[in-house]
Structure formats: structure tokens, C-alpha cells
Length: 404
Image (cartoon, rainbow, N blue to C red):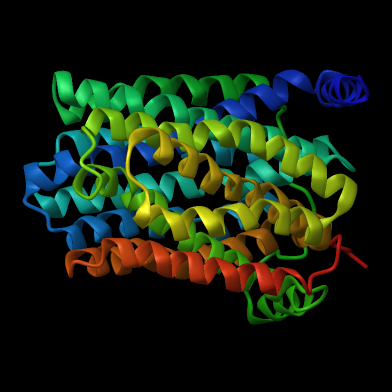
């Protein structure tokens, strides 16, 4: 009963005072964008066949997507600090919609890669503005608000990939991405209507100068922020490598039909719908260190056992075990939001996430190269080993971020 009452109180706090529609709009946009990104791994076998891509080149395509998603986060953060978060988030959804038109009409691999990069760049405008506006709407409850938003992202990643896979199998891979275009345009309209109009506010980063850069770097060196950024980089490397090739791995190494592999891939994100709000609330209550270790221990065992598992139900169990690592994003990003000063919050978050995600984007192409050489299983054992390092590093973190 206490748990039910606690969940009810949390829900009322998040929905009350007119905040609910804002949270729904922000979270809904994030769900569509993340679902779009996770359609790529499901369609990768079709793209390989249509464009004659090896596993390494297919991995490079995923890396381009993630790299684009990383590079725009710093500019997106600066724009969020200086201008309207509503405008930045709306622009991101519209850019992705336009880029998807180019993807589904791509005549050559070069155009496919360029359009995919634009998909990533459009997506990169959204996440920092999402965090900064949520921190304004929910001071003191950023963990819970961000957890719900990220869970909605997993809902999009649960629903859209199997639909895309079914459409690709029944009609063509182009339809597997094309059906998302009107959804993105609708999201852009909703964001523009629902989110409040904002006026530019004072920012400590009024110009892209060396002095501004020194100030931001000095602030980021405090409170273990660079250490957290390194942990975030390792996590992103693992997560992108795992998600980028998991459906392909299930098809080529576990002999599952592509439709079943797509559903199992969605199961991974379905568990995240539950894990992320719990992880965000755990951060608010017990802090960074304990909550982060709790969500990362299970995936170590899951990744290490994956090469030795056969059969659909054991694979479902391992997928569920690995999925708890999805909660780490709600924890680390809440810590960063708490720790970075308000006047550079967007810029600081953008700098940390751009650096971490840019370096982590190397994961899929490196993992694809390992798989191309016949070491698909060994690649997952390597990911388990890196995750052990992340858990050990986490043990030296403080419980909460501090702006002081």
C-alpha cells in the first residue's frame, strides 16, 4: 500500500499545477525521436541487402547516426540557454522528418549516409532543451520527471521498431521509416502549441569566445563532472554497440527470424519503460552511487551469458536482465542537471553529452569490425568487461550533484 500511495503522490506532483500537458508533449516528442533512431537496427539487414553493405560498413552507418546525434547537442545546449527551448525542440523534429524523406528516397549509399547524418543532427537538438526545460518545470523532482520522459522514449523504442520491421517485411524497408514522417510533423505542431513561448534569458555564455569556453570548462571540472562524463562515455559505448547490432546478432548467430528478433529487441526497451521512472525516483531518494550500481550489475551477467544462451525464452530472460542498464541515463543526467550551474546548464550538459556521445559513437563501427572477423560472441563478452569497469568507477562517486 505504501508503494502504491508513493507512486500516486509522485504522479500527482508531476501532473499538478498545469504541468501534465507539458510533460506529455515533451515526453511524446522524445518517444517518437528515439523510436525513429531504434528503427535503424531493425532495418539494418534490409539496408545491407539493398545497398550491399558489409557488417563493418553497416556499423559505420549506425555510428554516423549516433555521431550526428552527439555533435549537435552542444550547439543545441547553447541555443537552449540563449533562446527558446520550444523553438529548438520543434526545429529538431522537423529536421528529422525532412531527413527521413531523403533516407527513404536515397539512390546510393552516399546519399543514405548523408541523410542518416542529418537524422542524427536533427535529433541532437532535442535532448538538452528537454532537460533544461524539465529542470525549470520540476525543480527538486528532475529525477522523476526525467525518468518518466526517458521511459516514454523507451515506449517509442518498444512500439516503433516492430511496426517498422513488419512494414519492411510486408511491403518495403522504405515504408518502415516513411510512416514516422507524419508523426514527427505532428509532434512539432504539438510542441509549438503546448509549450510556453519563451523570451531569451541571461546566459553566462553570450558568445562563443575563449573566455566563455574557459568558464564552462572550469565549472565542469568541479563536482566530479568530468569523471561522470567518462563513465557516461563508457556506458554510451556499450549501449550503442549492443543496440546497434542486437537484432542482427539474433538473426545471424541465434537463427531467429527477423520478425522475432525485432520483437525481442522491442522487449529490451519495454522493460526500460518500467526501469527508467524507478531509476529516476531512486536517484531522488538514495542518490547516484547506489542507484547506478543497482541498475548496472544485472547487465554484466546478462552480457556475459548471452553467447552461451540458446532458445527464445532464455534469450527473453537475458534481454530483460540487460535492459536494467537503461535506467542509468535517468540517473547520470539527473546528477549532471543538479551539478551544473543554472546559467550554463544547457551549454554544460551539451558539452558533456556531445563529448561523451561523440566518443561513444565509435562503438558500433568497432563492434561491427569485430563481428565481421567472426568474433560476434566475443564482442559481447568484451562489452561485459567494460561494464564491470563502469561499475567499479561508479563506487567512488558522490550521492548527489551540487552546484555549489
